[in-house]
Every structure is written in structure tokens, then in C-alpha cells.
Length: 227
Picture: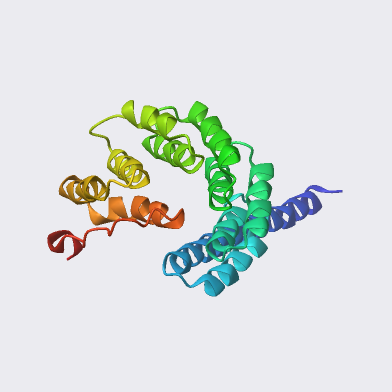
């Protein structure tokens, strides 16, 4: 092959590389856009739309752990717990270090009433994130729901206070509810609003509701924080 032919061939090869790279960029943009839309729909409770967007993201980037993780979160909200667990396991298979999938799998165990399994999974995550107030809160709930009230109290007794999250207050409220101390529980739920925003409290309030700690009415949101 002469030099002109070689240059021509290399030029064609360069164009192909460029086009493939551009296709990769386009796929990444499609994936990112679809995943953002799926997340937004999920947060708005539009689960059918969220699942549709997850499917679109998967077509663009099929091997991302975020895809089965979000699909599993959708299934969890729909109480399709078996399917949700499968999705979280798939995410974990794609990336064994993908923390959200491990946490969400523990959540499914908790919601299914498999409290020892959930506690074991949360405890494993504590090895990765030993300072997590959220994991302490979840471990306390598992103990309470398993009838291990003393263990729950021991977990909460060593929680950081004041913490970066409202976990301590909601854990104390849960213990008070379990003991039938409604006034004490109500006080924790009212006091927490003085130090943490409605947005910070929302997850923990929902977590208590999901496992049926509903003996105490949560206080109304602070007007100044909800504007």
C-alpha cells in the first residue's frame, strides 16, 4: 500500500473512531436524561412514567447499577417486593460496592417483616459507614419490631446527639410509641422540628409510617420552612 492509500485508510479509521465516540456521548446523554426524568417521576409518585424512563435509560446504558436500583425502588413503592429484591441483587452484581442497592435490599427485608435479615444487612453496611445515623435508626427499628426493646434503647443511647440528621429524635419517638408513651413521643416529634427542616424530617417520618409506628400524630410542617 502506498502512502496515499495508508493516509486514506487512517483517515477513514479516524472518522469511524470519531463517529463511535460521538455515538457513545449521545448514548451517555440519553442515559443521563432518561435517568433524571425517571428520578423526577419517581419523586412525584408517577411510577409508570418512572419505569418507562428507566427502560429508556437501560437501552442507552444497559450495565449501570443505577438502573436496576431505581427500578427496584419503583417496585418497592408498588409493594412488588420480590421483584424489587431481584433488581437490587442485579445492581449489586453489576457493582458489588454499590451502596444504595445494598441499603435498598435491607429496606425491602424490613418492609417484608424480615427483621433479623434487615438488621444483619444494615449491620453489614455499618462496616462501610460506621458513623451513619440513618443505619443506627434502622437498627433500632429492627430491634423494636423484633421485640428487643432493650437492645433498641441501647442503640439509641450511643447515637450522636445532636446529630447531623433527625435520626435520634425519631428513634426516641419510636421507642416511646412502642412503650405506649404517647406524650413523650409527641414531644420528640415536636422538638425535632425546631432543629431540622421539613425536608430533613420527611424521610424519617415516612419510615415510621411504613413500619406502622402510627400511634402518634406527626406535627404540622413549620410554615416558615415550607414557603
